Image (tube, rainbow, N blue to C red; front, side, top):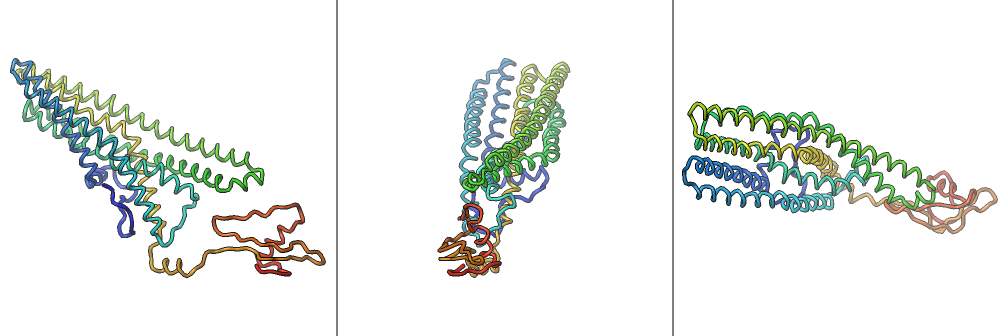
Length: 397
């Protein structure tokens, strides 16, 4: 399961801008990802075994045991892989979020993002979810999409016909390469979508924290227009990324899946016409081609998750980079008191007129104080005292 991120020493996430193929090695390191990949590969092999049983049955051979084993094994591994794919990322998400919070609470000094606290709120909620879906769900699909077809092709080459398996093996690797190319080209869109979402969260959080000030200043309409603008930017960025995902779906399903199936039918028919394989073998090859294209379809469907997950991963890396763990930072944290400003029983005079009498207040970070009153009530004089430009008649600043 996920290791809590309690200390600085080593960052658990990969560096930004890494090649697409590096996600294969990253995913294999995670036990949950390995479990999903193994379950999916076994699922594809059991389908191939069932297809072999169908071919033997067509050739008038009695193969009920092979078909039963293949069907039962396929059903069991399908249930297992689906369960791991749905429940695993949710459990991992809680562990990742707890690890980030533990690291934040144990950090001697933290530099907030330029976008404000709302960006961290978005990271702890939406980004952690996307990261978990990618690392503990999509990457398992990715590993299986590479290993599964290779295992099935090897099985078909041994059990049925190596010529057809070789022909399919030449075309099949083009799909992961194409999807990897799309990942590289669309990385900027995924990053833009995450940034717009963080900006929207930051604006909303700032509005909630300063709601009283917004109401007192009558700035509701202005803040509303800002939120609408940020929401529209987030919507456009998300729709742009989803449009890219639809393009990948078309390429993976309409091009590669259809081409692989058509190639299998043509080569199997040719081999059967040449007398190299039986009708049952030809049917087996066509049935096996269905499971060979399944990983490509899954990759296309999970493309959006993969892109948003990698963008969230880079955001988490930047989050860790804002933590200060050096001894100097620790000493600075211990020596410097919390900044605060205020007045205690203060009176302010300007000429012969006493403007403020007996004023007391204290403002600390995160707890603002609002000075309100009619013109001439002394608001500017209080600020002048706090800045050192004006002295007090009585009291203490």
